[in-house]
Length: 508
Image (cartoon, rainbow, N blue to C red):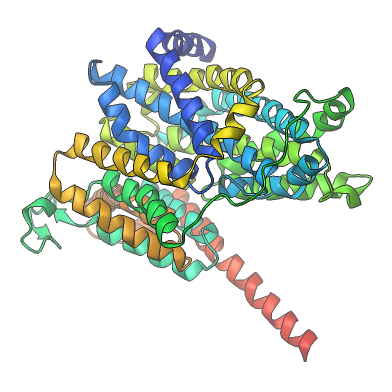
């Protein structure tokens, strides 16, 4: 079968009435999640995993997995769009990748052009979604074909690269990010060892014999952690909401935005492919590129529509690009895709090179649903801009109980364990204190998910080589991955040290 045939089959899966509903709910909930400051796509996806398990209870295993991943993917790229609403109207990023949008988006809103900024953001997001979809269609299978040839040594090194890449770019301090990665890997060792049958770090607590459930840790650290942050720091939406007058952009707005949207989409997609780079880096790069190419760079930061169009397109394209390493290599390239990978595993589906041959309905159904979802986002967000603006004004006293209810009931519905309810609260407190002290949470979750797979591949590689660790550098592809991973950590450190020396010399 050709790629087009697979895509048509995927489209027929995505267009089944229940999957259309899942796409709709996904992008709608995702937009609301993006609009509400502080929640973000990671918390949103983590919060909805247990709910999808309940919603798909009547379907077969393959159908349940397909529908759940379709909904979670919708939440992911819906949230990427939704973050722009608060950036433009409140000067408050809904999530981290929308920080750049505040620079010009809020200035446009103050000038009475909030509607145009939000509309261009929606159009840019749709265009970026189509670019990412085309990239997925044409790159997914070739990458899978290459990845099938990987052995355990190559897979182990690829996972090391994924962990180092996210650690290299997560948070303000690389040391803290690496510490969180190591902590995640340590948490992954809790439970009974599959090979030797020895219990590790269980302290004779029966509930720990099966290990820590990724879902409990993810929902606890992200969703419940945000609740503790809101309560303890008394956070609220104190910004003044900008008024929305005209929603449709003018012909000049569309003309000025066309090239930035195209450039941002392509740039964002390729940055999204890189492990650990993600939407934040994509939006910053896109903004810098537009400012460099502009004939009038001084207008940036004062309400330039290009400063909204390009970064918004880039962060949405990066979300689509991040799906490629997840689906084809089984390596998450961002915190959100790490949580989505946990959802795949929860449904006994292993993302990676065999996904397209073992589960073609799921793989192509998810890819096709991204087109349907992006179309829905455009149709939803253009007329409902004023409605989503009202969502921003949701009082915290209503929002916090809702998040706690979803977290507790969701985790209990999957685990049926009171121990997990205590653990989710413990993880929530830990998540709050860690993020308060600038310890990034994404490397911890990624370490917890990749840990068992890394251990299995390492054991298999050492079995093949009779215990010789040289196998990891003797295999050319494995060596390349390890070198790239090392450079990913070393180069930023060298640049940082050089920067400090220049600063000292200037001051001296």
